[in-house]
Length: 272
Length: 269
Image 1 (spheres, chains in turn cyan, yellow):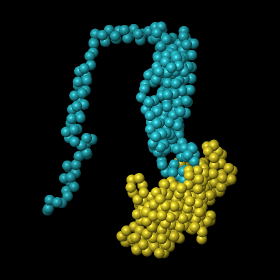
Image 2 (cartoon, chains in turn brown, yellow; image 1 turned 45 degrees about the vertical axis):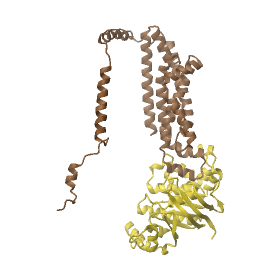
Image 3 (cartoon, helix red, strand yellow; image 1 turned 180 degrees about the horizontal axis):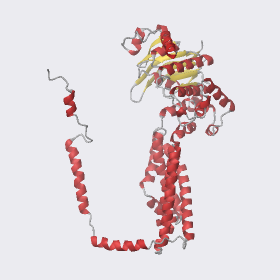
Image 4 (cartoon, each protein chain N blue to C red; image 1 turned 30 degrees about the horizontal axis):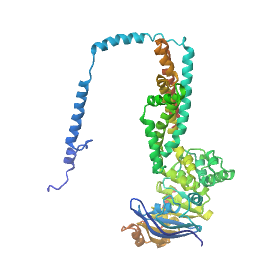
């Protein structure tokens, strides 16, 4: 028997699945580096155990102030804040989605020419870079305290979120379907309406429902910087040490977020 | 016969540097069903896409009914595309639209944006769509979503979409590549029948040499972007096939098509 004969059994014994990082040295360097960093990082955290123990007692007293939640005394304020939040959410989501669609079309590499693509990707990057709170502070400084600032903030954040995810979906459409519609002599807008929209519609509706849900949650936070809504009511309650009212507001927020989440999940399932 | 489609010196070089078409000259008279054969990558798809300019040719001229397609502006090109129906390999139906919407989409070139947005097509277009659906036995499926159909049914809808354009020429890209042999023959028979009924010319890209010989009156062989064969099915001998595809034992490929027909009939019985 010559040595050149291929032995499948020996090859099978020697075979191992290829590792994620091919270079052995690099692989172990990465693993050990990560472990070392974790150890050092844990060592650098200073914990003051006495302070934490005192805090536990204080925290318990703080939480006790929440019970029983008081929906009655500040009923008017809670209702007003809630309505303001809901209005803010719906209007800002609608405006944000309308503005995000042209940006998404421009940010899809298969539809837009390079300069437009870069411009729209730039808009998305700016909108997504800053956390809502930071944008809200800027808008509060620009248009004053109140729900208008919150609305502008949420609409602005919605553009980045929707446009980015929608653009990805547009880039994933079946090119053949678009080609077939173009071949009929359809114009550019007909191409969008007949080939692109049918393919991205489920995602567009699903994302819109999801964003409505996010915007309501955000609207509760934006009140903390004076941008209106139920967050304002919550902030005022804390400022006045009315923890029972604050608890009521928190419960209302939780209930609405749950309802939104359930509704958006249901909508997304229905459109698939 | 009058020349319907005239292609002169058509060349396409892709940005990657690949030369897909190398000075192709081709005349197609009105009403002629022509099969375009050749190995994968020979430029068959590029050739028919250069005719309706889904792919922009690098140089050369394409004329349809005397109108020079190459060099038309965007709006004029859209008008010219209405006269060229295209049929695709994977059907390329818009799957989330209904069968009827897919058929009516053949009228987009004749319909304004808002009427098409609200699906307000002229009554006679809808009537025509129903007539065609009835012709291929799909009236019951009119309001079903296109992705609910089988492959053969989808390709029929694809053919109807092209016919709705009121074309003079059909550009057909591998119509049977995703279909089983029996459905393939049915689709080819339907295509040829419709072309005869309406006096349409067709350029059919096809891999299956036996099908091409069975259904087309003229066969053009493309290899590496050049035409290396142009003649009747009978003239397509082993030498010609070797010129198109390269060396192979072609004797069984060139069995008489009637023999297969008989086999098929026996199978069906």
